[in-house]
Length: 599
Image (cartoon, rainbow, N blue to C red; front, side):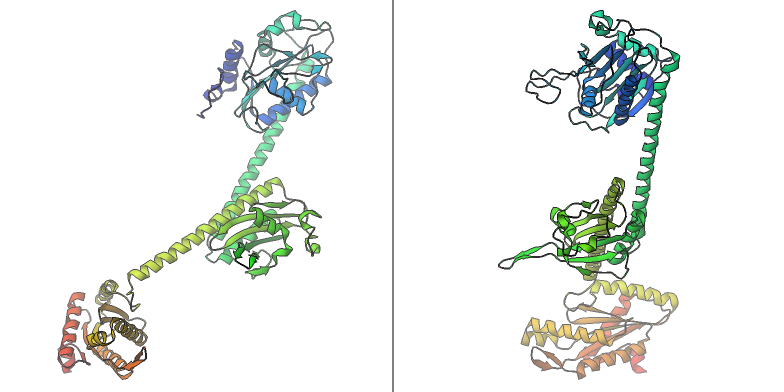
């Protein structure tokens, strides 16, 4: 249930308590006029649009003016104050009636009210009908209530409702709940509940103070049929508008679905402008990128740059430079940061300064809609749509605005998602990479070694492991410093990375120690590969900071025979023992398992 602010009336919540219009009207009439209706016998037609209410009022008054009753027969016209003001503003004449009354609102107007329809003392000043002033009924209504009562020989009608917005700024189309009835007994009950209609004093001399209980059947059905026809037409228009809105939603979702599988920005934008041109039947549809203007001291303002990122006419149109000075509609959209609608394209105005006005001659309507504004990566993105025949309808403009914002948000989210993916990949790379040598670190080495060993044991494949370090590396640090030693480690890592296979995995084991995993390699082959690596390091001098020198490495080799049940720790331990043996034997050599060395 919607919450409403407190109003000084008893009918403030009754619209929300029931869905039956008969119950709603019956409760309201009982609260406002102390009238009890027969709820089972009363016939009311629901009315849920304020615009339709106003249209029905105009039709009723028009019908009353066309069919004037006998002069000897009294007739009654009763309205609320807001409806009367609306009729005066729209210059709708009132019919000649025996009694024209107005039910003023409960809210008091300020003493300084000078608006049309208010006197200096805040009282209503109403127009006259046939020289007779409109009577103000003592009974008052809520400022949000609407009421029209017609009672004559041919017609009887009660049209009543309440708006859900404030009176002063109420639009024609707003939330409205009401109903109407042509049942004469109900209209008579409301009329007789007002003191002004009971007393003959209020009637004019040329009309008899009489309210008849019956009306001729020949004319009593004409007005209700017209009212039902108007309501049916309004309902069809409403259903047509809802169908158009649903179609627009479908087109928006379809356009977003179409561009969702594409990763490249140009592909996304090209599919987007294709969909837009197809739906709104546009002759020119493009996405324009405008970089925000920059300022530099002493250089003045730097003009913004513009590029056509995508055009529905050319799939190869990508980042095409655009001379922004020739497109005032784009400059205006950039300056105002909002929609520019040329519907139709004017002959002068912002195009007066154009030097190539012929370029706009074929177009009758043009729209420039913002998609992304002041984005850090892309600047400003605008959707530019032009048509050669006819103008853009209001529905099409709303549809394009929604679609442009939705596509801009989708593009921004896609860019954010890709940025997050790249950031995650970068963080993942940093988490498994050694910062000095850019090789894999010790943690990743163990994880990858476990995977390779499980694969080798599952498919009965050979696997080898190399562990090596630089001989007498401490001397480099003591002689040249640790920064020089870091450069030696970087150069050694670069050479090793170039010498191994793509399937091999090299990592910094710690300090000046390195490790290499050799999948699909027997220990004998790993011994030969280790010897090639040793010679490549020893035979080629290092040149760092103008210094030329040679270094040597010692390598320990181990491995897992095909199908052998062993562990990574055991293989690493064997390689470490082999490396220790190479160091003890004089360094600058390769050592492996005894079985391989003896063979």
